[in-house]
Image 1: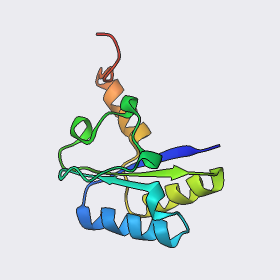
Image 2: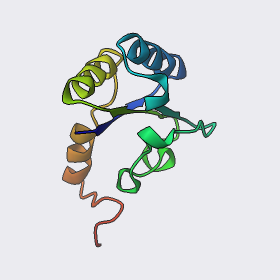
Image 3: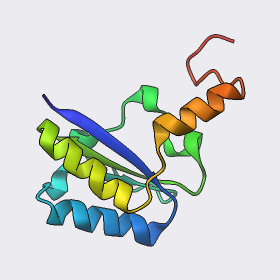
Image 4: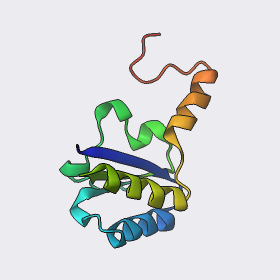
Length: 109
């Protein structure tokens, strides 16, 4: 089952290293999306789901790296590469925001 793995990286050089290491791990370049303040394109195979928001919604200095993983093993490999490069844990960050009464982009007020 295909999965999209998304990471937030806060340094452009680190984000480029993530992409390099993802390719080195066997993930096809066309399955890797990259988007930052310069509006780098995200390929359709690794497109961000609208419910995940946009770069502007998350942080003005964040770079989003997305992988369209074909298998669970490929998804886990992508996660490990992203973690090694200090990717923000989006689930953990969302939990912290919700403790501060954040309701999300689509939650009713």
